[in-house]
Image (tube, rainbow, N blue to C red):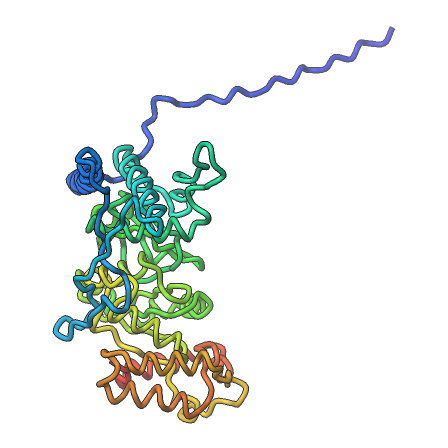
Length: 393
């Protein structure tokens, strides 16, 4: 008689969850959080007070516009003026923004009390709903929500980071520095090909600098150029820190650059495209943003230097016609606007730079240097500019 074949019954492995293990929590600045909550409560309290007194609820917001922006020649940064606008509930043109402001204020207060943060996208969804009895949504799109949050920053005299709101990460760093990010030690010398993603919130309570042996910071416009420098280990051979902002650097990158420049006394050199947009990016890094002039004090780097690429590099480096990108009408108008900025207007070298670009009739990208050699930018161009001190200020 054949022996009966037996099979082992498969048993599912039980997953054990260690509930006793404590998870790491976000570093919290309780004093700053308490101050921010007081500001939110004061704004809401004034609205309630006016309502109970049978007066129209309203609050004032500093005007965020070019007309309310001034250039401080002594500090060499952009600052916000004193003009304000009143946001009222019973004004049909303002009532929507009035209610949106209070809605997001409430959301920010809840975030702070929960000791958590949310992205700009998260804040949009946190406040998004349809008003009962109508088809009216609180926000048509995220752009509305983002604008209100910027209004709240200036109305509360509190930074977005203080409201526990962060933007999408955009920007990378590598080099001779070790940072402590929310309690985690990050050695930026050992970040591989990807580098360290610069966070949106770089305030001292979250980010600290532990060890830095670098001599300077080289900020490049795009990650494609940054990758060339990282692969060639430029930061190692020239003892520096490499950063990039994927175009115009977001606030997290600008705040990181500002802090490293101020606290670690590191000079900042910018390698950007030879076009009106590269010039504008340099302007934002150096003097601050026109739209966010209220943040210039903690972000602008007046001593930052423009390394290139320069209009004269076409002839100086004997570049081919292949690198030329024709200026369009938008480029020309933008270049003229930048030349008229008060901080560029009186600088002969910058006027000459912009005029040469306009006379050339074309712009150039940093990547155009690849036509000389794959590593020309890391082995020849930047080392020569550093050695000769050939920068625009």
